Amino acid sequence: MKKTTKRCRGSLLGFLIVILSMFASGNVFAEYKMNLTKGVTEFSQEVYDLHMIIFGICLVIAILVFGAMFYSIFAHRKSKGVTAAQFSHSTKAEIIWTVIPILILIIISFPATKTLLTMENPTLNGENVQMDMTIKVTGFQWKWKYDYLDNGISILSTLDRESNLTRQLGDIPGKKKPEEVENYLLNVDHPLVIPVDTNIRILLTANDVIHSWWVPKFGWKRDAIPGFVNEAWTNVNKIGTYRGQCAELCGKDHGFMPIVVNVVSKADYKTWVKEQLGEKEVAKVKNTSTWSKADLIAKGKEVFNSQCSTCHQTTGKGLPPTFPALDGSAVVNGPADEQIKTVVFGRENTAMQAFGGLLSESDIAAAITYTRNAWSNTAKDEVQPKDVKRIKNS
Image (cartoon, rainbow, N blue to C red):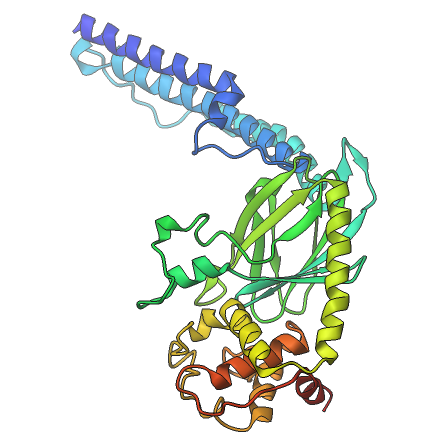
């Protein structure tokens, strides 16, 4: 029995030594998927350090409590003839196990409060900082819109085509298996682009229901609530691509609205801004031009697959009753103005959202033209950007 007891004590001691040695090296924990990520912002590093401090405190408590428990089990076991003491309570013990946890909580509160203040008040290296740029993030079912308030650039970010095709039901041309798609359900057509080492204010809201913008390596998440504007800030110190997801159950396709942020050098960001402003000017021309029917259909298919197929499917069959079929639809085969109104203004009490503020007149015209000429639909006419603008202004 004594040999068994010694072996048990030796095994317990060895286990504790291994745990302590792992904790002593913070980098070891970073290799395991179970631990938090250090992230790529100063704030995320603070969150990680706070986590490790509290984890260390919990580990010491666990060692003391379980160590005392195991020692009592082995040293005071019945086989040694030990008789349990009889007592009702101990005032001294009650004071000790009340005061010590209070002191521990007070100790934890100092770094925790500092971290929370950093989250709410933009600080770097302990000093307040000014924001270099502001981005408004708006959540939609099921996409994100990014408005760069300093230069007028707007981006609509939607699940990428390959992931969207793959996640749909049925046999669809071009559909792959999930394992064949790189970053399945975690890729988008237009990522958010920001410069490295830049103080960025982020304003978050939503157009329909509550969403939540979350990129784990940034170290925070914020709810996007209709009618409210939440504020956050970030300063990413490492160039790269960072992925996240909506962290709020926001509807049927909640799992299909990923977030992708490309952090680039400041020089590359300036180049990107120039390109976007150039495309913005091109879009203005497209919105006032008359398109050929062939060009409308070609562009419309691209827009439909990107923005509409999530609900109505690439086959146009939809997911009735929530998302009606467009193939054979009375609206699609009816007067063009009625379909334009539906797309531009949406429909109340349905899942059909208003795209008038999301897509350009040329994109809306192209998408409508495509649906009126696709599948078994018989309208076979075309809608020009000027028609969409007329309905918007009516």
